[in-house]
Length: 430
Image (cartoon, rainbow, N blue to C red; front, side, top):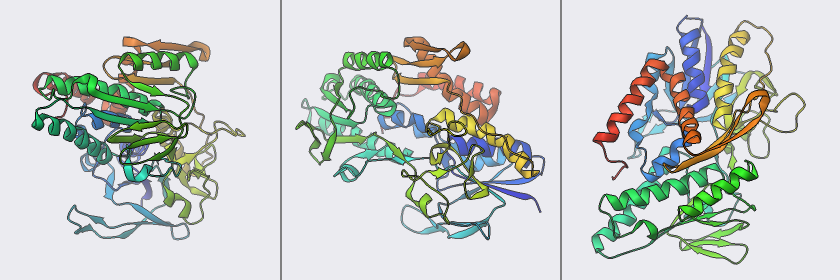
């Protein structure tokens, strides 16, 4: 019987791992690779802010069934709900259609090696009203919901044929918040250009709210200042040192007695792993629900269960109190590492330690610019901005595509993207 490797979670890391393993162990009939995800399609999570504004259509999603066929692995739709480490089985919840009819029943799936790569969710820190009155950009569905609400504001104004204003509040000035704010300014200009001009670009009031003293707290002061200045040039109202106390239907209440009116609210501050990870047959988790792993990415209590990406708390290096940051580059590196490590595990050989390599951070400011840093020679940090930073940023997504589709097909996709810009609207209008 072939060794069964089950990868739960089809995000950037999980999908790359399943694809790599399928092309090697699956193709060579050395193992049976199965990818599990509750959805049928995948989109690169760092692009969700573009889906939310309509700059990117969900038509660009990858289909798991097709990817599995092309790359010698299996796909099972389902959401992980339970784990039996003794029996080496996982429990998958039933899948339902939009009408509530059961499509696929709940079932048990066996494994010999299990990799959990379920990513992360937005952490609202228990803020009053956040869950009820704001959108979390955790999935394409959430991003599409925001897009429909945004488009609805413009269509209402267009039907009334009178000038209107729309207020949008974004809580959290990390990469997601900053990128969304810039992309919204681009969307305002595009919507007006397509004739929905009763909300003029300057009448989309974008408020970016940050509890800390500056935007992009994970990056350097220089990059943060540059991003802040760019946002101000775009007409974004940046509110720093403004911790949110409550979100209501009318807007955002901050602890410094500032009220920001907003009909659309997005929470983009903080991440946590899914809560169900704390209930997986005793596996060790931390305070934000991440599975605690060793530097081999094996969970602390079970050598046959690995975790990777945002849902894993992996030390930066042996003995370090800091963990690998929840970034797309971390998941990409861990997928490449586990492709080799699981082959050793299959042959019962010792596993090497995963060592995170920081290649820098880049933040897109839509079509206008980008800011960030890259690691130069001898690990020297080089700050980049403008066109060059924008090209580096775009290359990150292309690298993800190369892993999934290969160089030739990625090249064809790049050509197709260029052509579609000539034949389709510059943003999604439905």
